[in-house]
Length: 461
Image (cartoon, rainbow, N blue to C red; front, side, top):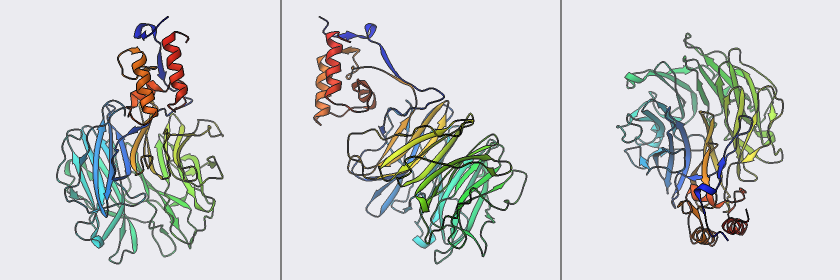
C-alpha cells in the first residue's frame, strides 16, 4: 500500500490553453480588505510584470493605489498610494484611474478635486523605476472648471496621448479635449478640442470615451453620442500627419433611444488595420461585438453576446492575430463573461465566467482586459468577501502538483487536513494551493477533492 506520492511519480497538471481556446483558470485577490476597492485598470510591461491601479474608498474619501505582480498574477506586492493629497479623488463608473507603461516608466491619470469639486482636474503621476517609487503628481488638464473621464495611451514615438471630457462652471458638458504630450517634456503641452460637439449632437456626458492610439501615433476616439436622445456609438480619428479630427461616423446605427444618459461606454482595439469593437445597446440591455477597418472606419456584422436574456454591459475588447476577444459584466447573473470571435468565423465562441468562487457575489463591475505574449489578463471588482475588492485572472499556463497543497512535493494526510480545514472555513489558501486542491478541476474545493486525494495516496489513481 502506498501512503504518499512524490514528485518523481506524480504527474504535473498543466493549466493551459490553445490559440483557438483561451481558458481563465484562477482568481487572485489584488486587494482583500474591509474597505471598498473599486475601478481597477491594468497594464503589462515588456518583461511580463503586471501593473494594477484602483480606487480605495472609505466613506466619501477616495485615493489611488497601485501594486504589481512579478509571477504572472499568483501574488501581488504591497499596495502604494499614488496621490499625495488624501481624499479628493473623483471616480465614477467608467471614470476611474488609467495606467500605461513605457519601458520602466509607469503613468497613471485620475480626476482630482483638491481645488474644490467644481474645479476637478486631471492629474498625472509617474514612476521611473517600475513602480517602486512615485514622483509628485502634476495637473495635466489645461482647462478651467471640471474635467472627467480621462484616458491615455502611449505610442512608439515617445508621445503620451490624453483625452478627457470638459465641463463648464455649472458642470454642463462642453467638449472633448485631446493632448499629444512628449514624454520627455510632460509638463509642457496644450490641448485641442475634438470637434464632435455641435448644436445637433454631443457625447453623452456620463459615458466614458475610449481612446486607441496606433504605434505611429494615429488617434481614434469612440464614444456614445446623443442626437435628440438617439444614443448610438460613434468614432472619430486623427492621423499622425493631420492636425484635426475627422467627422465622426456611427459604428452601428441601432437608433438606441434613451431619455437619459446611461452609464455605458464603447471599447475599441486596433491591430494593423483591423479594429475590434464592443458596446452596449441600452434599449435591449445587450452587448454587441463587431470588427471593422481602421483606415476607412467601415464596420461589419454585429454579434449579440449570450445570454441574450441578461443585462449585459461594460464590454472590453482585444484583438490578436485577427481574433476578437471580449469580456463584459453580466449584471443578471453577476458574472464577468468572456467570449471570442475567431478570424473568418461568423459565430462567437461559447462564453465562460471568469469569477471562480464558492462565495456569494452580488456586485460585479469595471472589467479590464489586456493581451501579452499569447495570454489574456483581466481585472475587475466584486464583493465575494462582503465588500468590493479587486480580483485578477489570466490564461497564463501554471503548473502545480495535484494534491500537494503544502507544496512539499508529497501528497499525504497533511494535505488532506489542509483541504478539510479550508472547506470548514478554518484555512485560507494561496492561488497555487487552490489550484493544487482542486483535484477534479471543477473550480470548487469540496469533499470530492478530498476523496480523490485519498485515492491518490492509496494508489488507486
